[in-house]
Image (tube, rainbow, N blue to C red; front, top):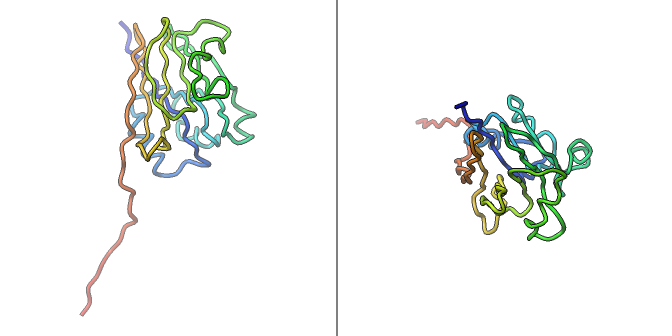
Length: 180
């Protein structure tokens, strides 16, 4: 049995550039991930630079800047281990489009990773595993914390949705003094 591969999955980061807070969250959430799958709406390509030490696969979303739209495909198929993973941001124009995802790919896939709705999803239907990691940047409804997914690829696919930890913002070093 070979060592399983861990893929970190995120979507809807909506960042114009990565900040220190985002970098710290990435270090924590994707510490074990060798591969990163970003399902669109990263907004700017600089977001992907945070993952420079890993293999990254990304697609464009409807909120991406023109430079990201020019460089990223709207969908792609990634082979991880013996599984084919379809990566896409959305299909159609509604928020209820999961049944439209499979026909978006020209070949059969074992798993579809998508975004757009900011709602995390992880379930199997018709022999296909569907994963929407939700919004990494906590842009969900009613101030919900962000979510992401980890996909373990071995003899089978095993996915799990996780909450992004709430980190206290780092305060600049401050001193205080009392003089008399």
